[in-house]
Length: 215
Image (cartoon, rainbow, N blue to C red):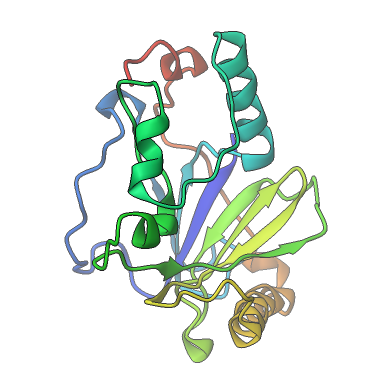
């Protein structure tokens, strides 16, 4: 499976803020391997490495639609301008998945957008890992790179309260330059600093373990 590589300036033993409890079942969780100086090609002292499962939207969403149709579901494209329009539906249960549209449809003034922006590069099949984090000098610790079959996705923005759907050119520039800096710093490293030894955690759940679970 693909691997996540999180670059970090301090060892994992350093204090870190508390994290929310994981929703992933215990039997599907995997540990991480910490690589120190000289054990990896990244331009930071430490790297955390762990196997990961990745969902590709271009594949997953098509499969999801096929499953809905296969099991007798119907997909109808329809516009709702007011709450009253919902009363014309015959279904006894309605799930609101209108996203930002809830602000207008239900007059939800508490709904706050969190704008994220992605930059997609040409696909590279040989890239089979994700990276999270950047270098301090560009403030790139929020950036991330994730390969997909249809392209390499660069991200890292999280603009709270921004409703605009237009691309933010400055954000795009920072994301791209942050990744250029990260990977360019690897070019000048001597061969002895390339990965010396790295492997997955001792226990990796079998593929079968990811199926047949209650959702």
